Length: 91
Image 1 (cartoon, helix red, strand yellow):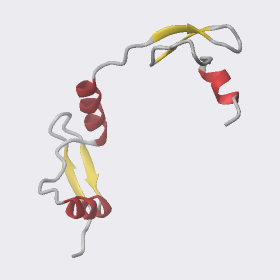
Image 2 (image 1 turned 60 degrees about the horizontal axis):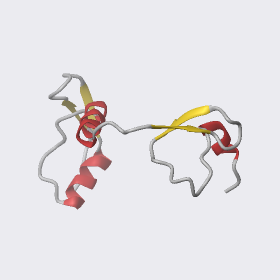
Image 3 (image 1 turned 90 degrees about the horizontal axis):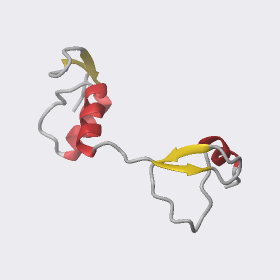
Image 4 (image 1 turned 90 degrees about the vertical axis):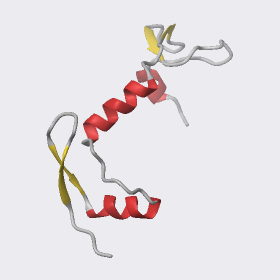
């Protein structure tokens, strides 16, 4: 079966978005019957609302000592870093 890109209208914001041939093929492989009704931005927004807001926890970076927030509750077993210092850590 050959798919072609389709232009759809988002039911939330009214903007148009493209339902690509690749996305249509994916939907068919997964057995989805309906086309998407929301654009990517509105889908992400709705997913975030369902998920709820993350609770952030204030901590002091173990490397530089600055105050930062992390989306998990530190247990004290491991050092916690700010995003800058975390990116400098060897992996």
